[in-house]
Length: 131
Image (cartoon, rainbow, N blue to C red; front, side, top):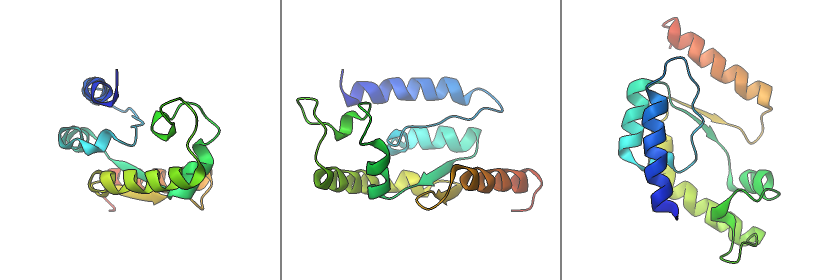
């Protein structure tokens, strides 16, 4: 039903999930475009942005068919140059939301274990008042 409909459903589900405690919610990249979503997240938890450059994003998603914003109208995958330009534009549009994060972790050059360790340290420091 298109992206606007998707964003309405996303907001509804976010409100339901944000009512939970001790829960990790993995947001889609566009969730933070909506100011109300950002307010909900900031009121109910810690916002962590896993920052990744356009080339790394492309390398990670080009083999999946689950990225509609990187597909042509016929369903075929866009070319790499077009994808990189599109990803750069998406990151620019989403920048304000991403910059509202409590913690930003650049993931391009880190392993999953390294990213996890940084996040856990931040949360532990926050809980113990060592910010």
